[in-house]
Length: 79
Image 1: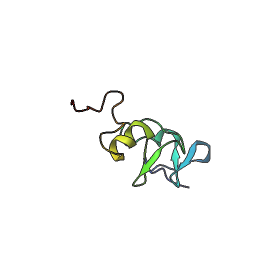
Image 2: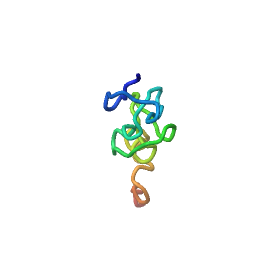
Image 3: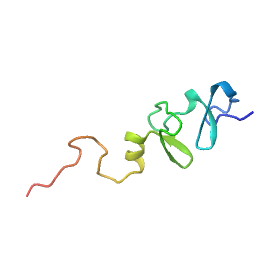
Image 4: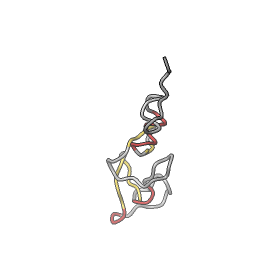
């Protein structure tokens, strides 16, 4: 019986979701930063850990200073 990577308890067939090559409990597959529950295939991965695509993965691992804070997050220099 596979073990959930988050809680290390056994994952039964009726409650499992498979993502990142592992079997998880549906409630245990959460973003490592904001703890939002994720869906298999609907998230990003870094070091075998799940992250929601927006905004967490972009903020942590994306280019710095672009598209991380919503509208008006980039300050343009006055000329």
